[in-house]
Length: 216
Image (tube, rainbow, N blue to C red; front, side):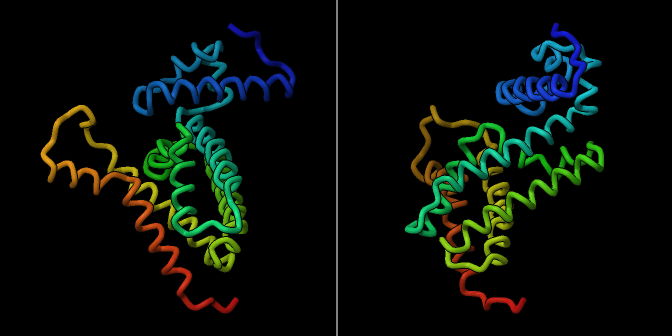
């Protein structure tokens, strides 16, 4: 059991340690099996101490989501270049989002579950973090895709919704080791998240680009 953090610096460091343990634990057991008691044990703190940092399980999840959003945002935009096509843009968005083991699983539960059991201050802070990341990505995306900043911002928000919806199609039973008839396999493949997301994301970019530029 770790000693109690007394200074603000110690508390900040302890919070990071807890979050690191929480993220590793979440990626191992998933959302439903995640418990605060197990997290306290893995982080080396008393359960009561854990609740000084996160008053509910969802408060911890919301913090992990915010951290993963920033991490994904930078991972995605680091791969931008002036010759990027629409196809490459959405492929990169999808690949970087899926590469982060926490981002998509938390994003898909954000509005329906996580945000319903957190303090209003935490919710406001999370929404402002989201706005900041969308604005940052939109600013960098606009010139690459030939969009205005407003259009790019609309695009990022729309692709986020599409990503959540497309990801839900991968929640069925794993059939990787099963021999399936060709028509059934073709149907399952057509509903996997990657082709659904990429095909429709490209269409959305094209549709937004052809819209009349709003008078602002």
